[in-house]
Length: 481
Ligand code: HEC
Ligand code: HEC
Image 1 (tube, rainbow, N blue to C red):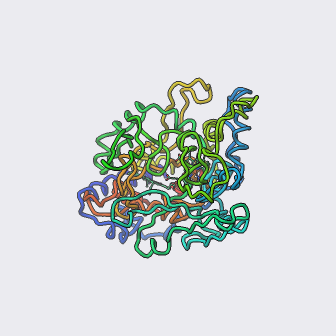
Image 2 (image 1 turned 90 degrees about the horizontal axis):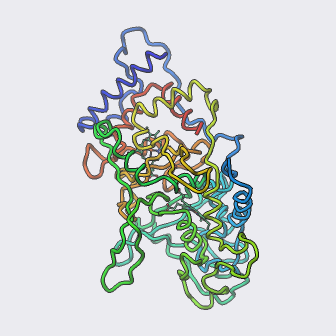
Image 3 (image 1 turned 90 degrees about the vertical axis):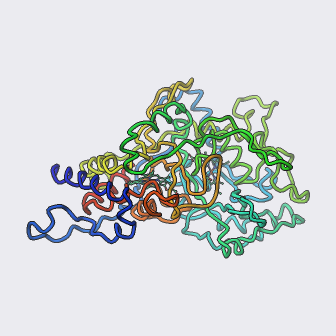
């Protein structure tokens, strides 16, 4: 067994050379027999191995809950913060007037609070709850992923890229005169001007936040020759200040360090994401994002910003605004724990883990980055087993969404962290598949090293050259995470 395994890795490297040279196209690779070996034909071949399949969503193991090693005071704050993350808000709390849902947990639910899109999309019932008159856009379904929508361009052809909230509070019993209409999603779909994002899980968010830029940059510089041979580049999403267009308001700027949260690594911190999500996903203004995105007067029932620090409160938890609590909940949330044996058994998972590195997945999906120093002992110099380099990569025309954020361009995405993958239902930024095999194939598009080519092309070629049992080991490993 060991020897066969070794042969495949050597083989993979050989084919890598071909793919990088542009001799093989993606179509040729897909057409080639998956388990061709140098010894094929030397002996009468036994029955072909069954085709590898995604073992499916892993159940039963506990995920979520607080980091190990929090102090009693930290645990108390975690619990109060979790309550805020779990709370559904209404119009009197400032919900809307435009929003995608009414709670953080509604989108971050699978398999536990803090996770990703659940089996049943709560946006469908929310569209018309409390007498709201929203229609459900065609790209949402009960059994599909939670989605938010971004428009690629403005009507005048200039770049947009922003989130256009799906629903309004119009028709709600609390705001009888609020007159809003939903964006024209059918029109945007017809003109291919709308793209989607699904929720990313936030387990272990505090560890990701605590990784120094120096660790990200040192990892980027590591294995340079191997990465270059495979066509893998990647760069941090450095958020530059400024960028104002003359005659326009200066929409935001930042501090020049590596941003790391979100599908394009567009956000710097958990606090920043909390403030943005509260306003953009739920329409609740706060001390980080204090301006209502839609200021129609008859649609405002709460003071602005809707969520604030309460100077009169007598406990720390009651004093903090919700955005601080969301950030604290996510910061203190434990990372997912991989299963040592399921699916496929410990040996298969171990073989899959070696293959994951040998064929080059780990050049982007870096298994571990270390955190730096922290006053929170549970975050101080800890391994973050996130399976991401936190860099943005050109993923080719097949995954491109046409949206730029910070330095991340229309084809670029953050290497998706794979911890917790075993219990996720939907994959890739727009939730286009629930099948790991499809998710891997979608990494491949464009030819050679043209600008349309994905940096992962050669690695997917390596994957396709594995035997079916080896592919199964790799899939078992992925679902053990
Ligand atoms: C309507 C669904 C929805 C709601 C409600 C929602 N989110 Fe999200 N969340 C998303 C989506 C979609 C993304 C990916 C966004 C992107 O990258 O553009 C995301 C990403 C995140 C991330 C980034 C994690 C990472 O590592 O990439 C954080 C943090 C986060 N959300 C926190 C929150 C908080 C806090 C709330 C409540 C205030 C919230 N979200 C409410 C859909 C939602
Ligand atoms: C060039 C860097 C790169 C390489 C090489 C690479 N990936 Fe990825 N991977 C990414 C990026 C970037 C994404 C997010 C793409 C998107 O959502 O559009 C991703 C997403 C994924 C996802 C979906 C995760 C989610 O949260 O939806 C899986 C699964 C995955 N990769 C597995 C693999 C495997 C297995 C390999 C090796 C065969 C591999 N990747 C090689 C960069 C890479």
